[in-house]
Amino acid sequence: MCANSIGKQFKITTFGESHGGAIGVVIDGCPAGVSVTEDDINAALEKRRPDGSVSSTPRREPDRGYLISGVFNGKTTGAPVTVIIKNEDARSEDYETVSEYFRPGHADFTYHHKYGGLNDPRGGGRSSGRETACRVAAGAVARAFLAPLKLDLFAHTVQIGSIKTTIFERTAIESSPLKCADRAAEESMLRLIDGCKDSGDSIGGMVELQILNVPVGLGEPVFDRLDARLAYAIMGIPAVKGVDIGEGFAVASAYGSENNDQMSDNRFLSNHAGGIQGGISNGQPVVLRAAVKPTPSISKMQRTVTKNGENAEVNVAGRYDVCIVPRIVPVIEAMAWITLADFVMTRPGPGL
Image 1 (cartoon, rainbow, N blue to C red):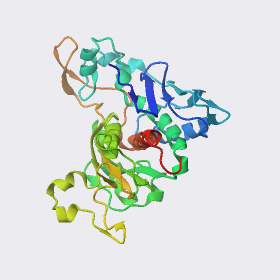
Image 2: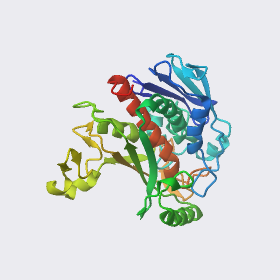
Image 3: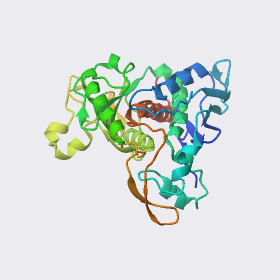
């Protein structure tokens, strides 16, 4: 069984490894007539590229996406849409010193045993976060397809380590190196990240996704729930270790009288459910949060074993993000666009 695809009608399949010649994505099921260009795809990819800030990797991939099929004269043809992104700044020699070790926190151990040691281990190979560029490219096509619905979808950093945002200023997100809507909190976050870099460590955080202008009725009972499918798509992102929707895990300590979204004058008085009830959108903003783990590659010495089963210690050198959180923001947005496109393709509603 191979699980490199997601979606039923709007289906994407990603391919390639971190240090191979290229990575890419095939989008099958996108109807003809969708206006989309390489510029649209590259604008999305630009949001994911490392920006040279203290949090990001020194690896400088141009991440230029090339449309090689399925689009002609700026419109989709109905054939599979294929995007290729070349790997131009891979340095496989960085991994030679750790090639015989299972790096703590990485997928080295599980991939090695699942594939009998035949997988490409350079830079994590298929398990590398580099693969997420393919999802961002596909998300740009999904967004173009959904343009008639006029959805407003965005994600932003709400926590780094123990530092949480308390102010929401949406206009600050795009210019923020951490994709954060709270400028004051961001200053503290950057100092924390800088300290992690100096000590050879890394730090995790939390990203919030909001989807506005969602029509009532997206989602299917009982197993194709909108919340379940969004959680599935976002949990499939490397480094995401938890997803909650609406009040999320806080409901465990809430009373029903506190958590219920009461109604008056044909509208909801609160949004504890995060815009989804019974697995179906209720017209309120969909609100979701994803917990992102610290980057596993750190320069601190750690205990591990070799591929021969011998005890060892390893110091993982190379070019890594001290905090991967801001670079996952556009990936979360992309997976949400892809999931929504698949729902709309399966059960078209008003506007398409």
